[in-house]
Image (cartoon, rainbow over all chains, first blue to last red; front, side, top):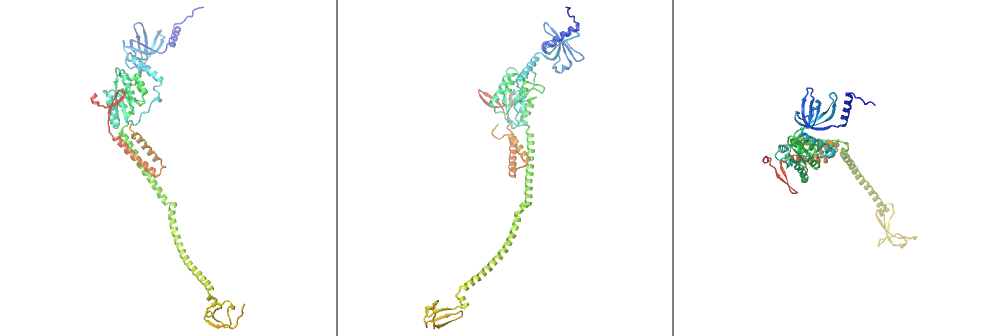
Length: 400
Length: 77
C-alpha cells in the first residue's frame, strides 16, 4: 500500500486540528521579547524562558483588557489558545489576557478564589441581609489612621448626627491585616450592639487592597449576622469582599452615605407628611361637618322637631278636648245627680205622699200602722198627707 | 437599639397613619385619635433627629468582655 502523501497545506491542517482541538485555553508564564505594536493595532511578541519560546499574537480587540503597556524583557502571564498559523507553519498563542507577573499572579488568585467562592454560593443574593434604613449604631472596621475613618465619621455626623459610630481599629494592609479584619467583624457580631457594619479602606494599589480579597475576610463577611457594607478603595476597585458583602459602596465616603439617610432630607419628608396629615384631618373634619349639616337638614333629623310641633298641636287639641270633656263630665255628673236625686225622690216617703199615699200613725206613741188589726175602735190616729195632717178616731175596723 | 421606639418605627407608623387617613372609612373619633398620634409621632421624630449625640467610640476587647472608649481621630493621626 502506497503511503499517503500529504500536501503541505493538508499536513498543516492536520497539525492545526490536532493542536487546537486538544489544548484548552492555557495560562503561560514567560518573558516578552520581540515586542511589536503593529499599525493595525495588533501586538506581536514572543514569550520565552531559558529553553524555549512561543510566538504570541494579541489582537487589537482584546486590547481593552490590557492594564499595562508590555515591553521587551517584562515577565508576564498570558491566557490564550494555541493555534497554528498556516502560512508560516508556526504554532502560536492567541493571547486573550496579559498580566504583568506578580500582580498577574494576584489577579489570577483573585479570579480563582472568586470563582471558587461563587460556585460555593457565597455571593448568592439569598444570603444577603437588607441594609437597615435607620441604623442607630454603626460599626466600622478600618484603620484608625486612614482617610477612610475620617471620611466616614465626617459624613455620618453631617448627615445623621443622631447616629453613633463605633470603630474597631485594624490594620488594613500588610502582615496580619486579613486576620485583624476578619476578627474585627467577628467581634462586632459577638458584641451585637451595632445595626450595621462598614468594612473597608481608602484607595491604594492592588496589593494594598489585597486583604479584602483574602478568604478569611470574605468568610467573616459572609458569616456576619450584622449587615455589612463593603467600602474598599475607589470606584474602579473591586474586591471579593464587595461580592460577598450585603451592599457594595464604591468608596468609604459613599459607604457612609449609603449607611445613613440625610436627616435634613428626612425632616423635609417628615414635614410634608405632617402637612399631609393636617390637611387630611381638616378634610376629614369638613367631611363630618358636612355630613352633620346634611343630617340636620334631612327629614329624619327634622322628624323629632316635627313631632314636637305635631305633639304640641295635639296637646292643644287634647287640651280643648279635655276641657270640653271636663265640662261634659260635669254636665254628665250633673245629669246623673239629678237622676240620682230623682231616684232618691222616688224612694223618699215624701214622693209617696206626692203620689197620693198617706201615713197613718197611732197616737200618742206615733207607731206606724201597716195593719188595720193593730187598731181598736176609738183609737186615735194621725194621718199625714203630702201637705198637712189630721187627727182622727177609728170608727170601724176591717181585718185582713 | 434602645427599647424606646426607633425613628424608623415612628416614621413608618406616621406613613401608615397618613395612608389610613387617606383611605377614609374612619369614624371621627378614630381619625381624631390617629391625627393626634401622628402629631405626636412627628414631634418624636423631630426630637429624635435633633438629639445630636455625635458619639464616636472605639471597640476594645478585653478577654471576652467588650469596652467602648471615646475615639479621638485627631489624636490618632
